[in-house]
Amino acid sequence: MKSLPYFCRGEVIRGFGRGSKELGIPTANFPDLVVDTLPADIGTGIYYGWACVDNGDVYKMVMSIGWNPYYKNTKKSMETHVIHTFKEDFYGEILSVVMVGYIRPERSYNSLAEALIAAINNDIEEAKAQLEVPEHLKLRDDNFLTSAPSPSSALPPTSASTSQTIMNGH
Ligand code: ADP
Ligand code: MG
Image (cartoon, rainbow, N blue to C red; front, side, top):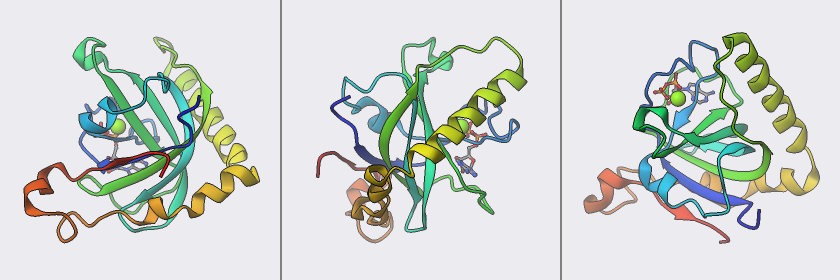
């Protein structure tokens, strides 16, 4: 995939409560603008990379890009599970990510929640290992991740409601 690594950021919006948190694997959703500007060669599936909430620490992440059943699979969603235990939810905050590599295609799970959880836990282990590769580890320190503009101060008032920017190959 020539577009990887891919850098993007956006406000964390509410998903459709498909029970990720209940499964113990909450996924932070990006707004449509971020999803709609994904390069064409970044298809659906599971990715790994680095993530940062506002100006906090950088953590490993796994991301699912999938067709959204809520919109009868006409729209995609980008859902990031940050591999860290946060004290609180971070809806409305700016999530910056760098997608580093691809793990596997999207699969549909009509099956047991246990099978889904097991698959995601495999993805998390794969992500953790892959991100220790020096070439991937160095992206953790990329300025992009920790340079999120503050929605209240750094953006002009007119764009405050769409506080998101997309960057690639910077
Ligand atoms: P939703 O359907 O609104 O996306 P989820 O059950 O998937 O609900 O929970 C996602 C929310 O949980 C995120 O938007 C974020 O505020 C919070 N959250 C807490 N810890 C994490 C984490 N480690 N990774 C991602 N989101 C987290
Ligand atoms: Mg979610």
